Image 1: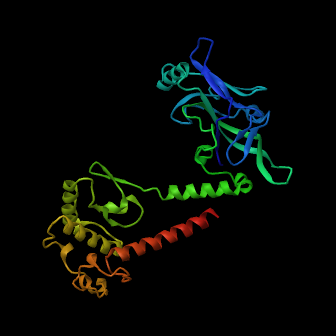
Image 2 (image 1 turned 60 degrees about the horizontal axis):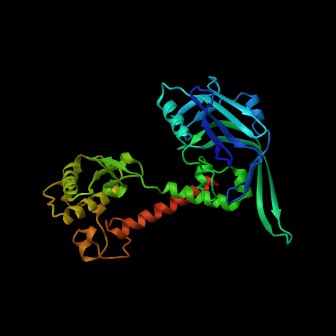
Image 3 (image 1 turned 120 degrees about the vertical axis):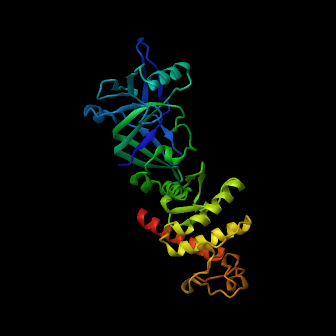
Length: 344
């Protein structure tokens, strides 16, 4: 199910006028055209009829936040009406709840005056408009029938101009029928999907949110596999954790052998940068023959792969940046390939 959200021009919300605590307004206006930037959309009269007849369980939420419940049709605190204008609502708010006090107050002051609703389309009609020279002008989408999930006031209406982020209109993904009619919109969603997938995760250590690159051992993309942090915002913290990583090296579970070798190189390089002695710890010991690097540059021959001077190094056991970056590139390519096949 792909939920859509809309703020329809002409919708509004206000404090109730009968003296009882609550809010009222128009969540959706019939036949009001809105240019999404990709197609023109409107809601046909009667689009809410079936949902109201079925007495669908609808919530009144502030900013679509499920933790900010103002009312609900099932309990009778939210009432919906299908009028010639559109979908009207009236909600009894509870002064005993923080949201029930704050939201009506903000609406009464005029700080909040927009309204939005969430839905899933059951029936829609598409058509294309061409000019006199048979050139394409625009696509039109008319929503004829829908399931309704929530209505309510919003601080920043997401349906007010053509530069809106697609995720505010389609928070769980663009429905297939829309993508089939507007291919370029599907491409834009795909781009944002990749952007979200590439958003950097962080793991909190010693009061800081660290990215994956801050850890010596980076076993996988799972936070639990990020171990031995060695990069912090201050030199004092960084040096303290480098020493800690050296001390904990032999006691840390690192099942990914390839990444373990890279972790050793990262710690050694960090220790060298901060003038920290490795001492007699197992971290400083030579690698096993099966782990030795075959690169013939002087640093690698001397066992200091982190200082490798071969920019085109392809040695799998080398701990240099070139080898590590090549491995990252291969993983990135595999991720994109898998993502494309998953989406398809």
